[in-house]
Image 1 (cartoon, helix red, strand yellow):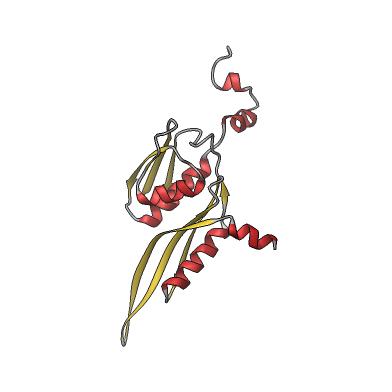
Image 2 (cartoon, helix red, strand yellow):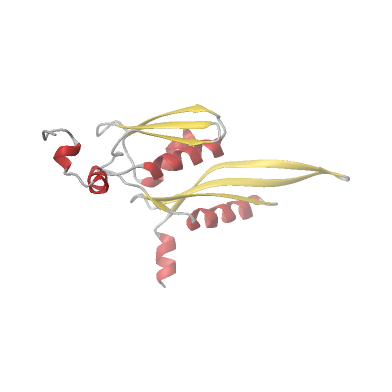
Length: 169
């Protein structure tokens, strides 16, 4: 029972489906790739990639893959705590927090990831590769890097006042 409840709390989004061809002696063999993002819009997300001969099988495989590599994203309110750059191969994704009411200003690939993470206000810019898979993975890497000010202060063993410079050093 507990597993069924856990499965229901995630929502899935298919980012991209590609048809690929393999040339063999008798002609071409077609198969499909699916890239999906799963998230609970409460700071947990995962990305998955699946390949199969039929589209529904590829989607199912990618969703299973996404649920296996979930991460928790540090969010403050409805935005991210600080600016961050994610890199994957030749794709670079720049994410920047913004004020409430701005919305998600991002391309389709970045938007699908940050929406599932529960972020509602963010600015983004992608550089380099336009490949959806690389951009999604770069966004995922950027969200992994996020840290709250409280966690940063604890790691550095200093107070929040000292971290933000309102205490003399």
